[in-house]
Amino acid sequence: MTPWFTEPERGLIEHTVTVPTDRLIDLVRSRSSYLTADAAEQARSDREIDELAATDPALAGRDSVEMPYRTCVYRMRHA
Picture 1 (cartoon, helix red, strand yellow):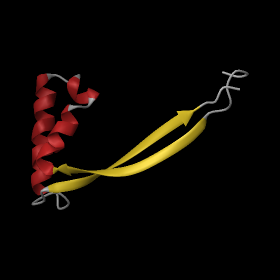
Picture 2 (cartoon, rainbow, N blue to C red; picture 1 turned 90 degrees about the horizontal axis):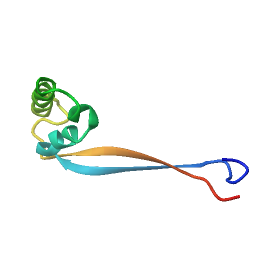
Picture 3 (tube, rainbow, N blue to C red; picture 1 turned 180 degrees about the vertical axis):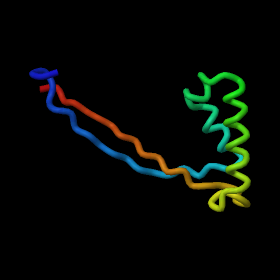
Picture 4 (cartoon, rainbow, N blue to C red; picture 1 turned 120 degrees about the vertical axis):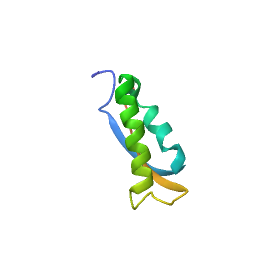
């Protein structure tokens, strides 16, 4: 990219999003690894997420969970 652009600048943004525990499965189902899996693998993932939400001490009995997100951004300026 040089000499037309400067070296990349990196920024990191951290935030949380409150997600209802019954919507955790929607997050899994939106990922490419789920979307490209066969039906048996998708069903296994669905069962494991349901079990995790029901039994994990951090999730069981809760209406929502704080999901941490980290967004990494890069910018290059025109030289």
